[in-house]
Length: 303
Image 1 (cartoon, rainbow, N blue to C red):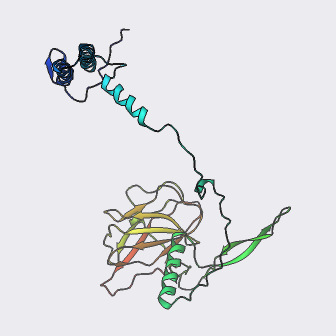
Image 2: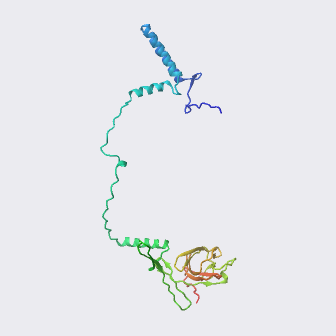
């Protein structure tokens, strides 16, 4: 493999005056001959004149055409004088204070607890509202807790584990079942789901615990775009659905066995939560009936 030199000065173009001679080299060469001409014209002795003339000519030629280690001679001359007149002896003086990274870290001084100011009514209301939002997003409801077990090992501190206790409310009579539904801090009553073959989608379910159905208003008109949320017996959201153009809705994965509630929402409509129970069998299509807000008719409830 052949090696080729790479030019060092590629950032700017240098004007060539004669051949490869640049304008800078021409002035350096002309300056050397001009100084030699001045010495030659001076009324000096020959033993002094001719050495000065020769030195001036040689210096001009060297500055123009004699680079050393790819550096022009003028840089070597400047570096020589800078090294001569630069200080070569330095004195160390100890600073009054040590640098920060050499100092020991100060020990943490315990600070006294600042007494908290009592909250006003607005701050208390805001704190309660934020606490309610946190509980809703974390799936935590305002429930009482009771100790169920304690774990104690060698050298460990006894701690009681608490689990939420859910209160169930059942009202018998007229076929209406009321279960606790947490929505903020309110308890919303629900009624038994209404099953109807007419609410079945074109492809009815063939697996157990699959929920399908239809959303209509009180006069059996299709309700499109209704948002449904399926919650378990503890009030935790399990599924979220939306009715299509025909008002149908369905889930893909089956539910676990247990009791569930369906919360339905739609602008300009009012829906009561419906509940059902999954027992590992085919669930008939569920008909969800809503009432328009401007209509004074009540939602029909199966008795």
